Amino acid sequence: MSSPRNYQTQAIILKQIKLGEFDKLLAIYTPEFGKLQALAKGACRPGSKLGGNVEPLTHSLLFLARGRKLDIITQSQTIDGFLGLKSDLWRLSYGFYILELIDLFTMENSVNRPLFDLLLETLHRLNEADNDQIILRYFEFNLLCHLGYRPQLKRCVICNSYLKAQANFFSCRQGGVLCPLCAQKETAAHPLSVDALKVLRLWESCDYTMAVRVKLKPELSWELRQVLQDYIKYHLQQEVKSMRWLEELKKLSLVDSNSSRH
Amino acid sequence: MSSLAEPVAKLVRELSKLPGIGPKSAQRLTYYLLRSPDEEAKTLAEAILALKEKISLCSICFNITDCDPCPICQDKKRDYSIICVVEKPSDIMPLERTGKYNGVYHVLHGTINPAEGRGPEELKIKELLSRLQNGAVKEVILATNPNIEGETTALYLQRLIVPLGIRVSRLARGLPFGAELEYADDMTLSQALEGRQVFQ
Image 1 (cartoon, rainbow over the protein chains, first blue to last red):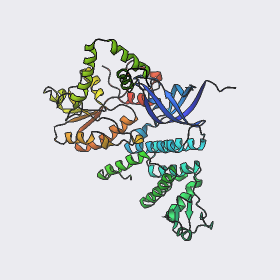
Image 2: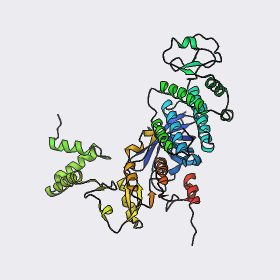
Image 3: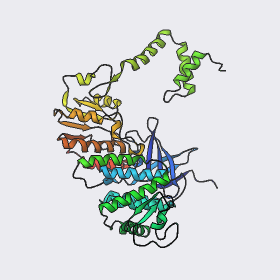
Image 4: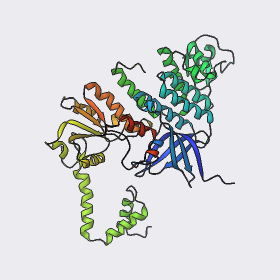
């Protein structure tokens, strides 16, 4: 039996490319089909019924018609527009970063339901809460786990001995933590503190509610950021463009003394 | 070897580089020009040349212009204490058509788009800030498009300009004329509600 000509799906809009005068080509992430490309015809016209429902950083219910090459969005309804997130420069920029990571790491038509749930919950959390550093780090870590890059955190990757409560090392190439002895042979390993290892082990098994309860000291937060972003860069093998924008913003907030984010 | 005469083939090639013009349309245009009077083709060619030779960016507002400063920046009747910031030169025309705005403009030539790696240094933001230094400007109207990139740009500019003690306003967002409430998205509707006005 051939697949139906129309179908309905939830989707998070990842990015848009303007096509011609009024149309948009979208990359969307769906729970049932993974990443898809879809055409939103006339979305840039004033008064378009698609309009704001198909802007990036929106969770929408979409009705699509199968086209020869691209599926066409015929109706749309916003489930959550993440308005809180869109009215704050920092959180909006983090949103861009999250969407870009999903877009870069996923292939079209490869279904990954847990990843969709993680993305949706991350955007919800970011929309409501203020502890965005933990949310981002938890997202980065679990993104890697859901994609099959879960680092080994209990035993040394090389000698397989249980890791002791001491300063160990993280190796992107080996995909996990090394004991100090094995780390001497591995040139590209970075030191990993006991606290950082504990937090990563916790995040491996706990949910968001539990994860955001952890209070991170600035140094620990910085360390986790370095480790996770190095690991992301190692697997991605390309630049995350919105990172450059986050760096730009950081310069701005150094001038602005009110901001405690980094 | 092409069966077309070289001048014809060349024009077809050049025309088909234009947006929205495929090889068939390019051929049609070429044959139209071949049949049309010499004068018409000459005027078109001159118009294209003049476009590249005479048009430059206004040194004050960065609108496209054939004289520097542009007619709007030169106009003595305009209110120089209000600057309306737009994304691209073609955004000025519709604002002028309303006849409701008497201030001056500033064209950014793009928006901040983190996803494409386009940052503020690629826009005319530094130039805008230096225009605000002399203290003559009382208000900046952010008229970037109401989409996610326009919003990012507006939030960034707000952050830069508010500390200078200058009033920053944003074009009202809400329902466009001729739209239906039933199909409006959440963001538009909630902003339309927040920005509602007394009806008298």
